[in-house]
Each structure stands twice: as C-alpha cells, then as structure tokens.
Length: 480
Ligand code: URA
Image 1 (cartoon, rainbow, N blue to C red):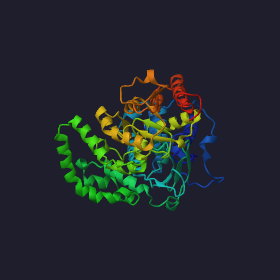
Image 2 (image 1 turned 30 degrees about the vertical axis):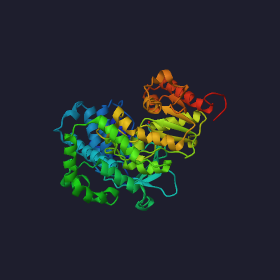
Image 3 (image 1 turned 60 degrees about the vertical axis):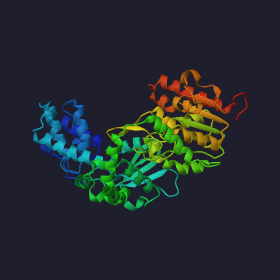
Image 4 (image 1 turned 180 degrees about the vertical axis):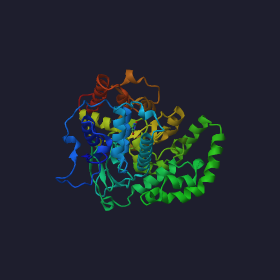
C-alpha cells in the first residue's frame, strides 16, 4: 500500500499533487490509502509523492478538473479515492468515460457534485451579514455549510459585495474580503459574529420586495429553507405576514397588469405627487425622509429602496449620476458599486475630495432586469426619468450648488432640460437655465464598458481630466 494525503482535504491543487505523483509512478487505485487519520510512523505506507515517476503526466480533460473541484468540497470520506479511480480510468484507455452516465463512478461523482452545488446555492441564499459595531462599512456573517464550500462560494460574495469589507465565518473555515483581496483562514465560533443590527431592517425590506406572492408554495419553501438556517435569517419574521397577504397581492398584481399604462398621465401624477410633498424651504434631510414614500412611477416596487443624495448640506458642488446600480440599491447609498469605485479613483487622480461633494442621481430607484441571479441595469424610460425630475429639482433648490457635474447623458439631460450630445459637449462649462455652471462628462460605467487596455485607459483619463476642470472656476483660473 501507498499513502496519499490531501491537505486541506477540499483543495484541488493538493489532491492533484498526490494524484499526479501516483499516476506517474503507475500506482493502481486499489493500492492507495487516502485516509487522513493515519498517524505518521515508521511502519506507515510510503507516500506516493516519494515514488519515482515511470511515465509522463497524462493530459486531463478540463471537465474532469471542474468536477473534481466540486467533488473535493463534499465531506464524503471516499471522494479522493473515487476521483483517483476516475482519473486512472481516463488515463488508461477510457478517455470518454465522463460521458457514460450509467457508469457507477461517474454516477457517484455527479451525485456528489449535485449536493455541493445545492449547498453553495444555499450559502448564497442564506448568508446574512451584520455590521461590526464601531467599524465603518464592515460586516460579518456566520454560516454553517454542510460541505467544504467556502472557497467555492466566496468569489460570488466578492463580486456581489465588492464595495464593502466583510468576513464569512464557518465552523471549519473563514473567508475575508478587505475590499481588495480575498483571504481564507481557520474555522470560527458563532459568537465571533455580531448579533442583530440595524441592517436587519434592510434585509427585511429587501426580502419583502423580492418576495413574489404569485409563486408562493409553502411546502417548497420549507424544503428550500431548512429550519437550521432560520435563526440566522431576519426576514423569517416577515414570512407569516407576507404569506397571509399573498392572495390579496396576487389579485392586485393581476389588476395592475390588466390596466393599460397611460404614461403621460403617470408623469403628470408623478409631478403632482412630488410637489404635494414639497414644503417651504425644504432641507435635504426632509427630502431624504420623504423619498421612500415615492410612488411616482413603477420603479419603486422591484427596487429594494430609493437611493437619496449624499454629502454635506453645504456642499458647493453637486454631482448627478444616472440611477443607482445593484450595490447602491442594496446599500441605499449612491456611487458605492464598481462605477462608484472607478469614480472615486478618478476624483482622487483629479485631486478632488469626494467628502466635499453632494452626490445624487437623476433617477432615484434602481431599474433592472433579472438574468438568473444577476440584476442587470436597464436605463429608465423617458417617462420614468420625467417622473423623477421633481426630486432632483427639489434637491437643487435645497442645496443651491455653485456648480453641477453631470455624469452621462441621462444626468446631463435632466439638469440642462434639453437633448445633449454627450461626446460633443463633454468637458466644457455650460449654464443651466437658472445660470448655474454645469460641466458634462462621461459616466464611469461607460468607462468600465470600454474594452480593457488602451481604450479603457484613455476613457478613464478623459473622465479624470474632465473632473480636474472642477478645480478651476468656470471663467477663471482659481480653484472653487
Ligand atoms: N451609477 C449611477 O449613475 N449612480 C450611482 O449611484 C451608481 C452607479
């Protein structure tokens, strides 16, 4: 017998090192003990990595490696041996083995993969972050996966919550994202994660928004949301109410769908609604408090929340974007997702302090289309933009900025009140109808959409150069 040790036991590279050595030494599957509990001793079997190679490493199909990465995450103690058996057979006369679903080894691999995929899905669905007391924008979640899936699932959270610092703690492993790099460490205890916090309200609001009453199936819900996850899910407390109200909400949805959409009427109604909330000498804080009541267009419904402007109430410069993106929608703050991060970098390169600016959007709700689990940005229609115009008008009246910067065509048209040819008009000062100097430039998302390399670098430099014009007065060389 020979010994093979995979450490850590879910790691593809660690397994490949052992399997490659065994295969090159011609060791048959039945001759290897893969168990990891054997204490080292003089009588222990020879490690496969100590054997001399007698043949070259065979090429392995990419499909096999992708499956192996998932299978290794399963807790089945026989998975290392199973994968080696498959590898051995692939390299010894059965190159098409993976296509044979009736083969017992292939079948078992598919079963393990399925269980791991399901566990990853549950982790994505049931992880709930809680704010770390006393730390700005730092979150920790506690989660108990069935399998060793933290490494497989962590990249999803990195993409989804790129703009915040977070850690996911599990009993066997932790994943930590500091905003720049993803690190893994040892297991944790539940009490290392914070208890309930103010963000529970956000999760509950988010869940109430994504809950689709027409697809209510309580039996499936119990199956999909095993009771062991419940105590970590703040939205569970909303379930009884949502389930009770489901019938009424389905009727309302059907009635709404049956109505022809009379858009001009919607815009007029919107203007009336926003104006009705208006008070003498409105403050930005008052506007922010009213915004969640807005029903001026249908965008409030699928969105998690409206995103109000942010910045000092005496800011001299207002920056207007198009509409919140996925991250902004979840966090309720403008420019915190990937476009916001690029914008921050361009501001820093232009020598401008973001903390001095008031940032807002022409449209206050995120409009999106669902593609599987991803929410893709969709541009608000001209009616939806018009329905939101009252909020920007009121923000401008409350702030009275000395300058306005518009990022992208939607913002420029909302502020200037006319069609804008962005590429022709960018980078020079113009005046809004009330005389405020306005600088139009490209949107950071447009920069991100340019092909990586020279085109994106040039687009980025153009944005930073345009922003740098803010440091000069519209009609003179002095800084504002
Ligand atoms: N894009 C915008 O226009 N606004 C945001 O707040 C984020 C992305």
